[in-house]
Amino acid sequence: MRSKLLENKGLLNLIGGGEYDISFERKGKEALTYIHEILSEMKANPKFIYYGKQTHGDNIEYCDGTRGIDYPLGKIFDDTDGLITDIANIALVIKFADCTPVLLFDPINKVQCCVHSGWRGTVKRISKKAIEKMCAEFHCKKENIYAFLGPDIDVANYEVGREVYDAFSKFKNRDEFFIPFGEKYKLDMTLANLDILLESGINRKNIEISEISTFSDLSLNSARRQKENYRLNCIISMMV
Image 1 (spheres, rainbow, N blue to C red):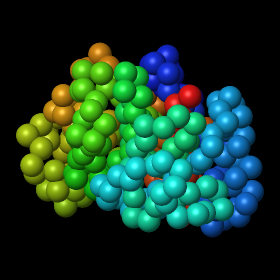
Image 2 (image 1 turned 135 degrees about the horizontal axis):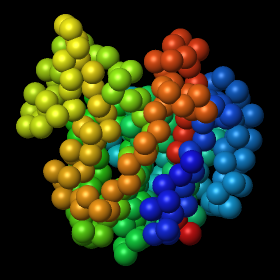
Image 3 (image 1 turned 180 degrees about the vertical axis):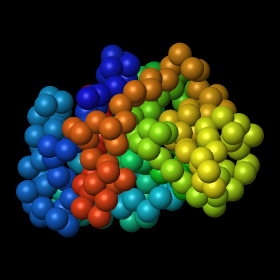
């Protein structure tokens, strides 16, 4: 399970689902074995592997092999939901259950960025911040950026309260991705994140959207489906 569009442009990537458990807190160093299994399937041999301690924020950190905190599985940044690099052979890892993983890649300037966009990160427009960072700090042009919206929970199974609807009040297209459902709403996270990418200037033809639901596809983990015992999926990406 991967983005074929981004892979064809030069970005190795692969999603690890229910067959893996990459939680160091639960599995200890065994989690590193799972990471290497995914990398082996990708035919990737990274010099460094980066993670973020994800907090549903919008902080994005630069990965160059020297920055970050040493971690049994590689290097990690505190309070970080986005990772960016312009260096080959650095693997970036984003964990997700029902939230939306977003990959961004500029094959011209060789810059990749991955973000974890839950509803809070989506409200903060973390993907837009990532695109702005690619352009401002790495001289990318929006017309050269390709994007992948990975598997997330489908709208039929994502019921949220009024407070979530209200949090999106600054989105002019809000009612295109919220469906009233009694006193609550159904939220389409894929459409919400697509709205951000298009608003940020990414060409629609440069965006690949996964049709897979983390809730419905039993090969993936889902917080809503598995409840308190849920595990995390991951998406790993690397330039070569």
